[in-house]
Image (cartoon, rainbow, N blue to C red):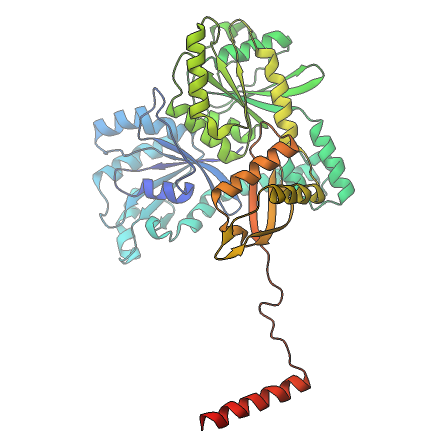
Length: 501
């Protein structure tokens, strides 16, 4: 499972700066769901080979009342969800009573905690950090988040146990000699990293297509996730496995329909079948983000009786950034009059135009209306995301697109597209090579993406197109002159020299 890192500390110690540094800001998901403090943020981060979720818990003022209330309402929940806690302090301001109060509470949580002294740029870090040893920590890290100094070393140390654990698990699964079999390759990413022969890769992809589709049902509270989960499981009459975990663990429920196996990733808090009708839907941002990361296809549930909210759009953004396939279910459709239905459809077209590749279904989870058609779109999205496409076909489609609509002129020269090939799957990545392709305007890039989607009949999955400028092999090579050319060069040089005299 992807590790979770919580940033904790009093206000203005640089938590948000570090959060933005790790998530690169655009990956940040602002969680302003009911019951969550509005300044608490969740984001997906990547640092070298590490992938993790980071939480900015907001400031704690450090007073007894402040720690008890703020910590309990906001930060304590985040700390409980976290695998690692980064406790930030201000190296310029020095140790404060608030820092000491926060440290005391963190020690009672017994979570892996790293003390991070921020803002050490422009000062002597050893002198600035000396007094923080009074907090009774085993290790201390000095960083300057604004300058990105020390951040990589900090995160490598904080995330090292998870890399070691993952490597140990892989080694145990692969045997003492570490030999990898096709059965060990459980994702497109595994196959791409395995450096297989063409024949073995083809067999691995075929086996992957036959595996159960992991489907996550997500959405903000009270949109009907629990009802839809119950409807799906009730229709299929499967045994619901009771697999309790921590507060941030989802439940993986195997099921089958029309010969296709699925694994339903449940974040709605359903535990036992007998309790399903009484299950209370508990929203957890961490559960949702982890479910998205682990799923093949994400089923986003939206309430037809409420306007599309910023929370819906935030979840959509996280799905897109994760590259997961997407199906949208507009729930509570029954009982709406025709005028309201038309108004809802109009709003969907206006606000969800950026995910026009996703199928939208209008359903009633309570009565079962339209639920059966969701499976068709889930299978379609999964097959589109894992479909293998040859270089020759991608290049041919690129040439057709170029013939139908020529690339624009850049600095007086026409952009030329040369060839295309697959750069990855789930989501499909297409790499286009050519001259000046990095300078193509966004409108032409969108044209190419839509052209590929239509030509390949891909629905339900985002397509990513990467552009790579072709290098001129003679650009850095100095051509050697022949003997006659050398004589001519000398004559011209001599003539110019005499003329100047």
